[in-house]
Length: 424
Image (cartoon, rainbow, N blue to C red):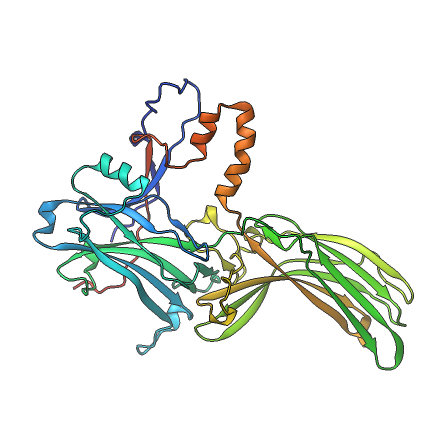
């Protein structure tokens, strides 16, 4: 099966017809992702990232274009498939599989079973542009569906990466229960993500621990405080460390780590990885009766952990848009142990080395690492835009598809997924 490369088809984007647009102004294009099996069926999606707002998840809305002569009385069906891979593909022998594939939503697209479907704005624009052979479809993630997470493979791993993947699959057949032949099927990878809540809160996470010694009096007290509870990807994690030594031992050095914790619910296992680290002797040794206060900064980034196996990423579709996996949010009234998929959390870990006989003093301070909601960021950006542009122009840039021109659309071919059905 030929793999379709990512490509922006610039000649499909035309000038805005709004007479208020002046020459030299920036053009704003609505990017549409598309893929097809050659010349017969083409699937269009307005986006590939669908956001879990805890109360609801963004609907998966798109349009499919079909040649009537190709169908010959057959129908077109769609499925949302969630694949949970918890073991290496190359280790699957004697019929043992280390993955679970689930169809979380499905339905018939052509002919439509809904005479008057509720259309989104982008569906209306695509239907108008693509003609009478275009049909809308809408699918939904069920409540509690896991977020997209990919565990970074090692150099020796050759199969599919471990993690949770989502895809929309369309196929031509006579019944919705058919698997669909790979020559008449196409699957597009999509991501289900979570954004940070609107408010980062005012609470400053902190931890206070002490260490005593059997054959000497006094203790070493360690207090760690973060400057916020929720960090955005790429931001510095600021940790203020306060050491108060009332013992007879000395603190030799200080180590700080940002720790990524992964809980794989399918096999009930947990593991942790350091995604940022710092070791220093600044202010050391902290001798008996002395105190030390210092703020240290660490930046956890996916780009700093490219060669490390097992680092969790936010659903890996392209190298240029990958982040460390975001913290998993749990809705109100739900038990954290009921979360599905791969549950991600973060903490800042501080270790004080007290010498060979003194051992170590360690504490962890939990925090959340997430992406901000772009819509909230756009609202903040609007105030700045009003100073340099008209209110109408600012409103246009922040409304995504709502006021976009029908012809001002950029189509981008979407890489097709490899299908595992046998070629019969």
